[in-house]
Length: 408
Image 1 (cartoon, rainbow, N blue to C red):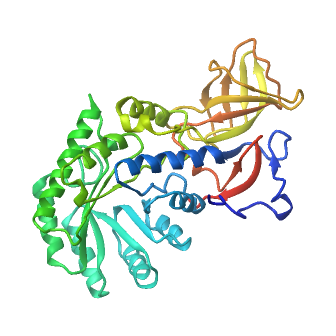
Image 2: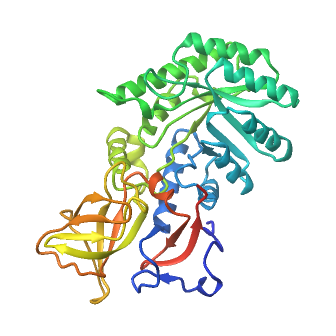
Image 3: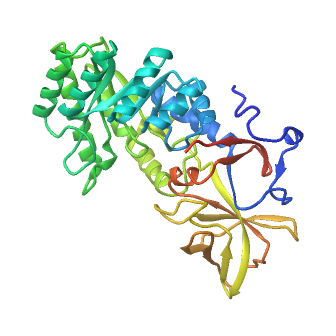
C-alpha cells in the first residue's frame, strides 16, 4: 500500500514524533484528515467503479492536493479530472499523465499551455466542448501547431450549466469535428448534478439514457475517432444512477465509461452524507460493498469566550471552514485541564459564522471552559480544502504525523 504523503511538510525532527493536537503542540484552528478513513473511502469508490467495469477519474478540484491525486491513482483511478488550466498545470508538474479537463478550453494563452504540454509531456489530455465557435478556434490553433486535441462533446440540460441542449446541436458539432484533423472526437460527457426539481432521480436516469442513445448512434455512424469512445459523467450525488444507466445499456461494452466524483475521498457530515444515504437506499451494488464512506476531514478550534450562558465563541470562521452547504457540526470536546476527550451531543449547534469566529449554542448543562478544544466535521469539503495551504494527516490519537500541501 502506498506511503501516503511521504516526506511532505513536517520538519525533520518531527517526522517520527509528529504534532500532538491534544497536547496543544499545534496552532488552532487546524484542518486535519484522518488517514485510515480516506484510505477506506478511496478503496470503497474504486470497488464501486469496478462493479460496473467503469473507470474512475476523480475530480481533483475538491482537494487540489497532488499527494491525494497520486493516492487515488495508486488505488485504481484511471485518471484525474480538473476544471482549469492552472489546476491541470499542478497535476502535470506532479507527473500525472492522464487528465480530463471537465470544462471548455477557451483563450489563446490556455491554447498555448496545452500545446506546450502535448509537445513536451506524455499527457493524455481531454477537454470538453459545446459550441461551434470553440471548436473552430481549437481547430485553427492546433492545426497551425500540427497537433490534434482530444475533445469530449458536452451534453447539458435546459437551465443547467454548460452543454449542448439538443440532438441537432450535437450533430452540428460532430460534423465540425469530422472536418478537422486537429480535433479528435473521443466521446461524450455530461454533468447531471444540475438537474433539480421534483423527482430528480428519475430525471437524472432519463437524461443519462438520452446521452447514451446519442453516443450509441454516433458510434454506429463511425463518428468517433476511437474504437471504444469515452462516455463520462457522475458527480458525488448521483453516481449510482449514472453507472446503472450507462453500464446496463446493451452496447455498454463498446464504450469506456468514466466516472468523475470528487468528494468521496474525504466525504463529509452534511450534503454528501445525505446523498450517500440515498445512494445506499437506491443501489444494491453500493449497499453490497464492504465498508462505507465516512467523513475524514475536520477542523479543531479553541473556545475563545463564554460571554453568555449557553453561548460559546469559537476561534473558527469563514476563513477556516466551509459554510455554504450547512454549518460545521461539533463532534468532539477536549478539556486540556481534565485531559478528557468526549463526543458531543447533537444539541450543540453553530448559529452564526463570521470571518474568524462562530457562535456555538450549547445546553445549559454543558461544561465548556475558555481554552477547551472542539472538533468540527464539515459539509461540502471543497470549500474547506481551499481555505488551507497545509492540512495535517492523523492516523491515531490526533497526532499529526505528516502534512499535505494544497495548490489552490
